Each structure stands twice: as structure tokens, then as C-alpha cells.
Image 1 (spheres, rainbow, N blue to C red):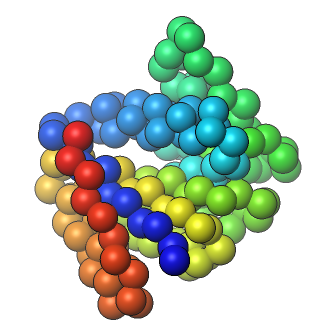
Image 2 (image 1 turned 90 degrees about the vertical axis):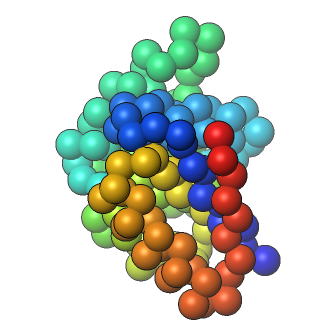
Length: 139
């Protein structure tokens, strides 16, 4: 069964949401997963690319922007499916991507910003309507 987790952050700082996505990706990579980090747009992907270099002095996650055609363990992508053989989707977009079903595990990172929270409530309903049982993880 597909595992879908909603990681609920206590504040509404967009930077904290990106940093948490980096931490989640780093942990998953250390556990041997290949990660597809689905961004809202190219600007967010580029911001995450920079953040992954500096969010933790003790951690490095090999990553690449999707437009570079890399087979890195962490692919930063936006828009259409960039392909690859990842098992974990970290979704930062405001909607569920059409290609979500190819992943064994999905992580949605939610902060308390009203727009983000409302969009991810719709994503939660989307998964439930398709028979999945998403879990809430309050941080």
C-alpha cells in the first residue's frame, strides 16, 4: 500500500517549509531512497538547489535540477514528470502531480500559511477520494 504522510509544521515561514523538505530529503537519501522533489515552479527548485548546499554543515545530498538531465539521487523538478526511478515524492507544489502513482511513498510538507494549508487540504481530500489513507505528522 502506498504511504502518504502530511508533515505539519507549526509556523507559516515559507523558508522553514523548504528547510524541512531538505531535511526530509537528506534523511531519505541516507536511508538509501531516491527522491523526486516536486516544486511549485522553477524559481522554487532553484532556491531549493541553493538551500541543499547550505542547510546543514554536516550533510550533503547529491542533487540536480531536472532540466540538467541528471540521474542524481535527488531530482528537483517542476511541472511535467521529469522521469527517473525514485521511490519517494516530496511534493511542494500546490496540487498533487498527475504522476503521483508511480511513487511508493509521498510526503507533503504543510505550513500554517492559509493558502498553503487550503491547497494541501484539497490534496488530502484528493488522496482520500482515491482510497488512500494519508497520515498527519505534527512537528
